[in-house]
Length: 568
Image 1 (tube, helix red, strand yellow):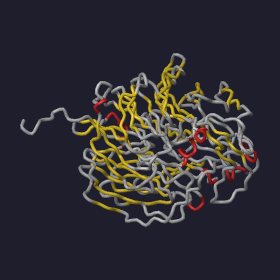
Image 2 (cartoon, one colour):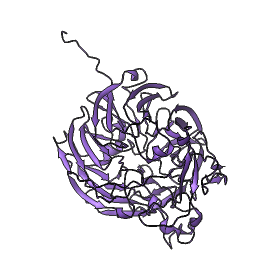
Image 3 (cartoon, helix red, strand yellow):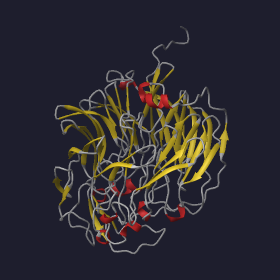
Image 4 (cartoon, one colour):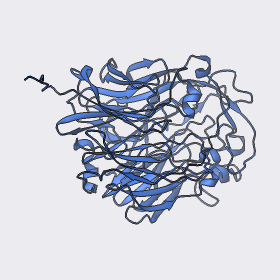
């Protein structure tokens, strides 16, 4: 199949529509951010806390009563398309993003619209993979949103007015931004997309008050820099290395961990022989300067489009009888990795996908032994390569780590592909793929989805829930013994965190491609699950034939138990 090149059409917008100002908002301090989900009334960042756990201590909704979960309110965005956001909740107000950089402030208890902002977009956007946005960051009295035209905005959280607006790079050469930024002290840190156009990746840090660029760390070295020797000739000039997902900050190590995507061209590595640093790696950066403390490369010389942009989880784990501050990632290449978060030392890894054949295994340093039978070939490989290029898990949706069970809950894809390899010349602003995913199991009807519970400490898979279609929505774990997610058939799901049994489901009318969250307000626990299908990844791996493209936020809670008849 051919990948569609998304070219956005002209969009003329009214910047702000305000009905009422946000209620009772107060500045979000560093101290509040450090609390994470320990303050159950907030959900202040993409991963819930700085460890990126997507875990809540709330247990009002639990295994014994989740079957009674019902819609509390629904918000329709009116924008058809992939709704991938992870909402933010602060002081009773929810901030929700949608495609084309739309942003709403909603009453978190009733769904009432407080204000709406839409970024004024240029008419000549060049986008690889759709006009999605995965959320905002919050600090003090500002929201921060990265945009499809490669800008970073600071927005007043009470009024929706733009305080500052800076260009990260030129969108006309393929740069864009789709994921939620990360707040570290007085810095707003963000990555960039554009690797499919060979745009050189970077991580930026801006001053939250002024928008001044404090530092930039590029992911592909230039002549004279360490790592350039891992690129044959001058292939580094079109090396890619996008940073399009959200990184993680650990206050204990005082390091920012940022995952890096694929080299360019994606599927043809003939002209870029070598390991191609620092693509398909995690970078540990010092927040004060952006200086590289250490790195670990998951897939050297990637020719499968195995971006390493999946979420980074940081937690204390047991390793060889000792407690270690560890970094964990369920990589797109089919392995779950555990690294020492302080040094980057490889501790161990194991397979979490049902099938994995591109690698024969990993050595003692975590380096894969590639099976030469399972690489892209001209006209397509005769055999299916597993995982397919989208994963496994993919950085465009999340997984969760439970403090209660010490398990990672990973929504995953089983859709292998007969990847193709093509020769092509680089032309700025044109996709530089060098091949494609080829025929996939989604096209032949054998793809499926798995939500897998993995235990990094023991390197075991504890249970698997299998779904008819690839799972492409995020996960949330709670102390109530539940894992929330959703499927492409449109069902919001709650599973038993110990067994994987489905305890509750609700039909939302469109695929779940989003990141669920939870919070408590006025004594009641709410769970939010945005619904809205579409996107290039689903087209590649397989989607329901009757899928509809809605775009709605569903918020659930348990019905009040103090019901009285009108005569009582």
